[in-house]
Length: 454
Image 1: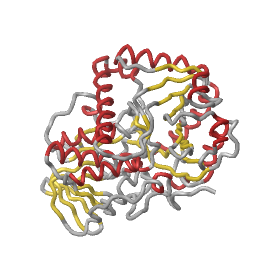
Image 2: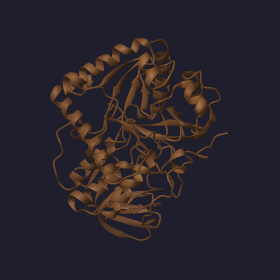
Image 3: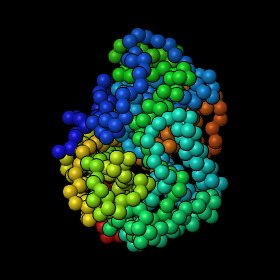
Image 4: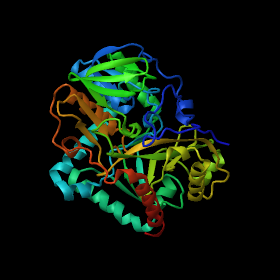
């Protein structure tokens, strides 16, 4: 029997608010990270602040940290529940040199080599920012460097080789191509690994500990964090932003929307109908015995993702458990249906047929934010320059969200951001937005067919 996270899952397309005082999900991370850092508690009176940040995930914490460290601006973070309660505390903990879902080949075709180079540099800077913050004193169970993108079919090997060639040619970024035999001998023995491209500067961490590390740094620099304070109403009065919470109003000169996949529908006119919240599901097994590890030759702790349209991802954790993730339910009301966790266990067991008696200890899900154009956008949200947002990481935000927070801090301080699609275009609206879930259902069925037959 495995642990469930919620009786009712918050659904951004249906619920006006993520609630208040909700505990962390009963995830592997929340039960293996120790007690959370202290904060200033809920907003209990009216207050005037210079900068208010809505959301205490990676983006909001990074923004507050960089505002204080680089610009001497002490921001106030307002969080509906707990610090990193959303996807920042629920994800798989992959530090990758990527963001969004748009391939570099598509970027080059659409915008040219110079813009693609700028995007690559931005993503690389994000990873370096995370590396430096961890080096400054964040203990987050960092594992060894290495990310394997595996070909789930022999026909996908050519795609990986083409990707490696493009990265080398356009960005002088060196990767390795691994054969199926190398994977079996040096990493793990999976029947679904027919080759791989290996990125040598990516790694796994405990995502909740990482967020709490950012929190401690931001607070030490003077940022204030208020939890259990959902924004229930938002008004603009005399060029001031008035955020109403259950026990007090926060009046701010500038507001940063840093809620990503947990942004309620109709929260702000600049974010309405511009993202699709999608549930990602994760299971963590019971610790593998030595015999199970030997049966799968599961040597590596590198992070792994496959080439499916409906991707699966996994890694071996420090205590020899296997974390395995993929798509979850379509709506929040179905999020805790055991079917989705059991489906992942079946896929994992089929991938490692030599390993007997795999069992689930933990299962949980979280919302990621999909943008229509497969890119995140960090943008001013109003004409007067008092509101900005960062949304649409498409499930690749663990490192890039920190870069986005850094850029939001620069925007808040009045600096000009690079001329890149991230910063100079708005999040596009979904056409026929009321049918987003229907389109998602259709894509899932297309993905199942594509992954099996093509």
